[in-house]
Image 1 (cartoon, rainbow, N blue to C red):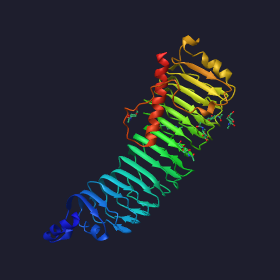
Image 2 (tube, helix red, strand yellow):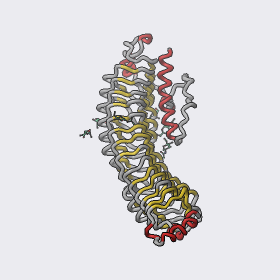
Image 3 (cartoon, protein in one colour):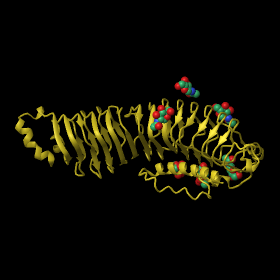
Image 4 (cartoon, rainbow, N blue to C red):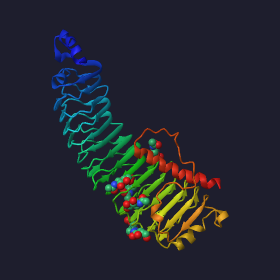
Length: 402
Ligand SMILES: *[C@@H]1O[C@H](CO)[C@@H](O)[C@H](O)[C@H]1NC(C)=O
Ligand SMILES: *[C@@H]1O[C@H](CO)[C@@H](O)[C@H](O)[C@H]1NC(C)=O
Ligand SMILES: *[C@@H]1O[C@H](CO)[C@@H](O)[C@H](O)[C@H]1NC(C)=O
Ligand SMILES: *[C@@H]1O[C@H](CO)[C@@H](O)[C@H](O)[C@H]1NC(C)=O
Ligand SMILES: *[C@@H]1O[C@H](CO)[C@@H](O)[C@H](O)[C@H]1NC(C)=O
Ligand SMILES: *[C@@H]1O[C@H](CO)[C@@H](O)[C@H](O)[C@H]1NC(C)=O
């Protein structure tokens, strides 16, 4: 209706085509006719909302820029949303709960501050500039099969979840400042990040392949849960700066490679990856500032260079790892008869049938895991990521308190 109010101003100028900037705080489009009223604005200064009575098709051709947000919420009419001119959205491009949308066609759109598209269950055709600038992207519960419409070299946060038909994601991302969360997409999702050099937080679940050949640094934590890959390789990873590495419940995993990893400035958790029969793939690991917790069907555990673990070292296997336990015990705290390389409590048990049932990042003794002050209003997986981190840090705190 703001559009209607403004219309006389357009007419007063005499030529609709002469309009270059139209200013609104928020304008709501509820029909194609209302969308067409914006066609003469080269820049829309403000926020555009597509209302729930939009009809099936909206063509927003005309504006090149929207300085505010572009928002669609709870719309069960819109099927095709299009603009052949829109190049940038200064704020958030949000679409939530628009279950009839099949097509989003914005062939000039290259820049958006933030994309949040959630519950667009029918969306299967997406055309963007491609989009090469965005701070944050969340795509959840769509029918997209690929993400070729995006061409990002850096992003802060990227969350891809519940896109049941998504089976490949390949991106030239080189840095990731915030969180990368990938979970519950197509069952055979293959993720290739050939140029990724550093990433802050990663939580990767249910993928069949995860390739990070150049990754050198994980600034925060990297967590891999319930994936389907048989091997995992981080050929260039040297350290985490402030966080854990964790692999839990990756049922097909049988080998990993970390040839350059020297430091984990956090904890290491490897649990319930039942096909993994040894942990011998950390040839250079020297220092772990959190705890190490290993649970699985291991027959052999070896950390040839490990000389400092600040937290507990807690190992348990369903199989006979007595030899590995004996060797590891040489590094146990002095109170436990070792050389003190492990500063926290050392524990190693063999033939434990229940070894795979304990996948928790913390020990039962550490009562201080509850970090309610961390008011992270992120997704469930963001919280899980932090819980894992605090879990292992708490183990370390508990251990050093002894
Ligand atoms: C992550 O680590 C890299 C390499 O040390 C550094 O250049 C980058 O600024 C760090 N990023 C964040 C978000 O801390
Ligand atoms: C590690 O990174 C270097 C330099 O970026 C690259 O040349 C090399 O191929 C990478 N290693 C692997 C195993 O991909
Ligand atoms: C996907 O991963 C989640 C989180 O780890 C897990 O709870 C769920 O069981 C997995 N789903 C499948 C089909 O593996
Ligand atoms: C262990 O992983 C398997 C999948 O490989 C899963 O079905 C099971 O629930 C997991 N157990 C625990 C205790 O997490
Ligand atoms: C694990 O993978 C590495 C590197 O690809 C390889 O050298 C090693 O032999 C593999 N180990 C097992 C037990 O398959
Ligand atoms: C892992 O060990 C458990 C308990 O011994 C056993 O039931 C399971 O078959 C083993 N899994 C694999 C893949 O070896």
